[in-house]
Image 1 (cartoon, rainbow, N blue to C red):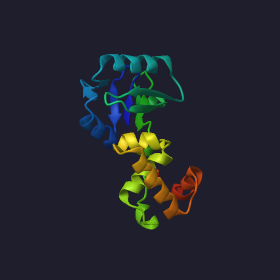
Image 2 (cartoon, rainbow, N blue to C red; image 1 turned 90 degrees about the vertical axis):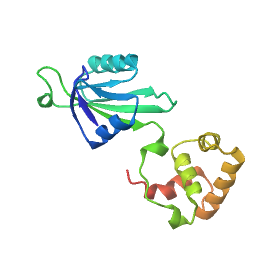
Image 3 (cartoon, helix red, strand yellow; image 1 turned 45 degrees about the vertical axis):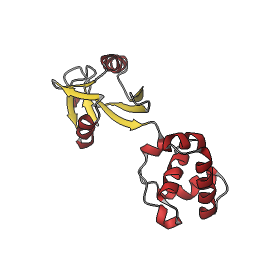
Length: 172
């Protein structure tokens, strides 16, 4: 998480924000300001923050690799910011639900393979079997075979039943 002013002056960041700024080449911290390597994206976020001033909102962008990132934006009490410039918390979240949640290791419990567990997470995240095949660089038939085996092992017959069975293992 990053805490910034609407002008993107960096006020604070937590360990996750620090790690993200070091590992993501599209995010930069320079001269005490938050920025993207793409100046137009930085300007777009700055304009969005200037147009809003209360509550919570969301702003998203497409990364160079094609994935979508959603930024949860929340305006904080003014005491943390400069006079007249309310601080804003920026929390980055992948738009793909399979990346957003933390899962307990459910594979041993259901006696499914790591590959099958990866497919389960993607299906629960809303991906179609075709999207799963493309993301994992396997054929659609391979994914369908895994899905049949997963359903058999878990004793379910639909995605809804799969979600209800696996949801207990979602941590966050």
